[in-house]
Image (tube, rainbow, N blue to C red):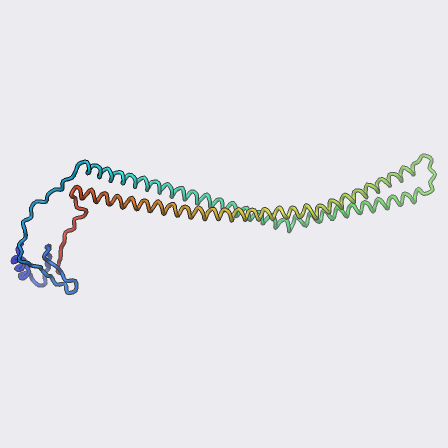
Length: 271
């Protein structure tokens, strides 16, 4: 289209109509919306046929191979990242089960301590004191019985020695009662000052150990989380770098073959 024909077309077109022009000479002002045609006295030069670029077949094949290798590498990296995500999810699930077990262990240890203070310790202390009381009562009964026998057989002249035999049995019973009382008191002392405190210490250590395990596991989980973040950041960064390299390789391949990346026709319009 010549410049004169274009001017006539604009003058003859109704003002309320629609004009669309595809030309490098047509421009639209952003503020006023006016159409501006840049006209010069220079005549368009005859455009010859575009010459196809000369490409070395070996270079072209090498570039195509590079693109294929990058595409394959990106696919493998995406698969590796997907596998890493699945492994991370499984590790998180296993860690959560581990946390649940540790919290349950703490609850059980604290429950054991509660039962010890409310039931076990009072029962053991009561039974230990009761054993001492029984031993003391038995000793008292044995002593009273011996005293009565001694009064009964005092001055007795039984020739068969029955009185002496009865008294000897009473003295032996009293001695056994005294020995039993001493042993019961020792056991009571051990129960009150050794066994019961050791039981309480064992329960307390179980609570402390369960809490330490939980704290250590929480620290391990935090370390694992940081390592996972760094790992995935590195994988994503490497994947982005490979994607950029692939984009550049494809662009270079298109330049070598003379194929445009994205042809974009220019057009202006007034409505």
